[in-house]
Image (cartoon, rainbow, N blue to C red; front, side, top):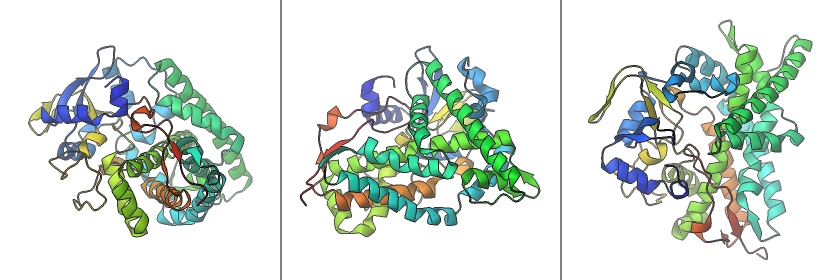
Length: 402
């Protein structure tokens, strides 16, 4: 789980591990740290919703021999808390991710996609990661948060650094840069709210979070900073990966691409199949056992690190027929794939991600005729991350004359 071959194609290793049992103890760092890796679908689904598994990294960080200096705003996000704190934070944050919010954003998503493809279409070549899959979700989440356009490339670079496989100190520095930036940004919105005795929900996402309240409860300023940092990162990283993974999957499976192109109503199920087939999250954020837990034939002792492999679970042959095949007509639903998680930590932004990916893929299929890879598949560069499953670049070519 450390070399370039794994990052390029982790599924053979996942298959070998799963064949030995759905839960295995594996080495997860060059310093000799171990964790329990779950690769079976049923076991993963159970673990993601199991209250006996804690997400409280501050409480259990010592299990890693934790000497990290991650910024507190990123160490204690909603993603790293347990009920009742998580329940309260999620209830308040969810008010900013309603169906109405996503519907309101659809025209803007379409406009950004059209602008990006209008620039690309006459050229005939592009890197679809840097020129479409990154700028679309980055623009949306940054506009929602009120991040000025000149600051967005730097924030994207810091976000990338958080998931790189380099030195931990570099990742820690990136966390502080993001936290410091969001602290300043949130302060400006609080100043705005203080000038207006009745801050208006929906002015932007930060204003909605500041104004959000329920039964007299509201988010503290520190909690808004933490949520803003989490939303910045989660609001584009997985969507970028999914757009790239989806385009690549269709390019490598021409019959599936033809089926989607000739019947646009198949695009939505095709996206769900890509979410299963090549999930943008390879391994979910870590969990910790608060007591012994048993999944299948394996009992994991208390105070152990647990990693749930979303990518492996979504290709479990016990759950899916021919799991290594891309099949947009697949009928094994429900239960669904686990790409957006399951249980109390299910992704709040899943509807927004689906809207962005649907718009991007529809535009690519319509406006870039005869689209094809501009390199050999084995030459594609993948992100060196166990958590994030996505391409660094996706060079493509098409026929601009058409």
